[in-house]
Length: 360
Image 1 (cartoon, one colour):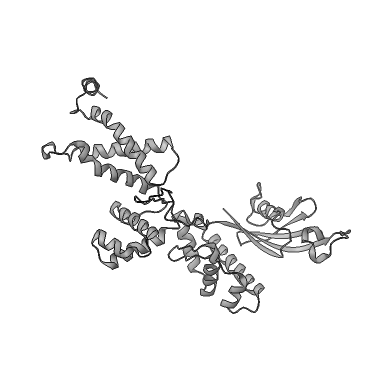
Image 2: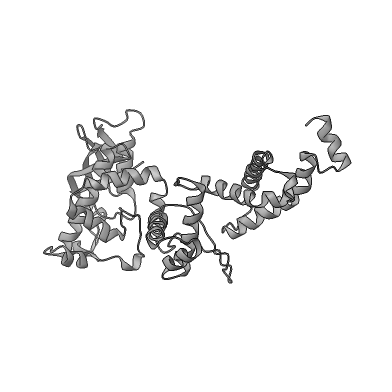
């Protein structure tokens, strides 16, 4: 700031941009605060607030050269729509996905609001923007496709209750968090296309998700394995469950080959029964970790290479690596340790014959 800028503050001259920004700061703060409330943000973040304000300041400097004082409009009025664009551009940059332009982004937000509040948003969208139903349907498909793989939060301006609900996500199902990053979504989608049709249908039906458009149905619509056995003509419920697990393992293998994640494959080699068994319980009611004293597992790193082995004590949870798998790390033994943690997990009371554990 030079001496002229300092003098402008002391002389309160609106012809100087520095004094205008000083006077305009309260208005700008209210605009940002109102936008954050309307956008569904219920917590104040000083760093984010400052970033938004700097983005608005940059927009003011950008539009300063376009302002014509002879047009009869004050600079504050001239800036109003441009500040709105700056706020939306900042919000657009925070999304986990991207659109071609700010104009498209505005239309998608509006369609998301209409889609949330109206059973048939296409006629309303056509009346508001004077477009063809085909164009409105394209924006509706776009809003549906991104609604479950973004962090977009919208609150309708005419929301009388002011609940601040997220109109782009279904709170009853948190699986879209896995697809929140567009990069990961593209990897999963590419791997999904490499599966056969039966595996794709099994995964989509069981997980209540459409990988093609990203739509996620509520968990209450999830079919059980008995229903899947009827739909895919399996002889039993266990047959449908095995087929689903096989499809999951196949998808994991493809993702591992594409470098999207890591996986360790387990294979039970032997297990040692306990000498003394509890008297009150029969063998059928006891989980494997209470029926057996120890087990030896073979494991493979990233679905490739020679298998390694480790000893697992079912009573104490202790383990000893007997031999490393070919692609396991020599110092941290990350694949062997990940397999051991899987067996130690209280949610796994049994000793699986085979298993595949994925991790990042």
